[in-house]
Length: 161
Image 1 (cartoon, rainbow, N blue to C red):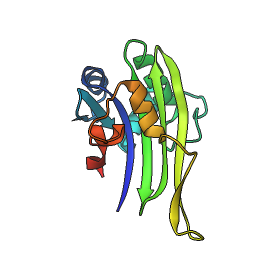
Image 2 (image 1 turned 180 degrees about the vertical axis):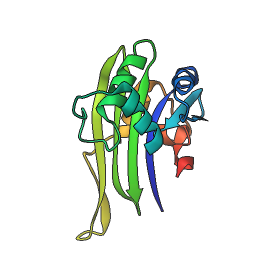
Image 3 (image 1 turned 90 degrees about the vertical axis):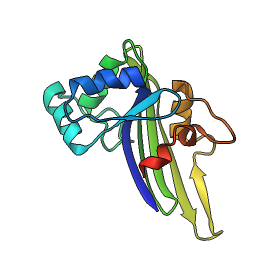
């Protein structure tokens, strides 16, 4: 099974503030008082048009984190904290990237984790080793884990597949 996620994650009140400014932004409630906005092509087009940043995209690790979206998240993070996450997997192989915004700047990341299949030994391997990019950023955002579930699972982000 495959899935793709491009989303802004934050506390529900912070996400509500963003959705109130963008007609096509839809808030999805998660556990632990968090919510997200899926960054659709339509929402990204609106942000790119209205923010109208002329800079290059800040991080090549991301598909949809344009300079305009980056500037919007920096601006919104002056008083709130946000994560921007991307994930693209199919059949257990893929990549994820994440960045954390607070105090008007990037405070963690960009982080990227790749999962690949090694046919020589018939197993998956992770690069780099250690905590996955999205979990690292969600942990710093304040997401707690329970019952052997990681941060991604604790928010039930897998249900977005």
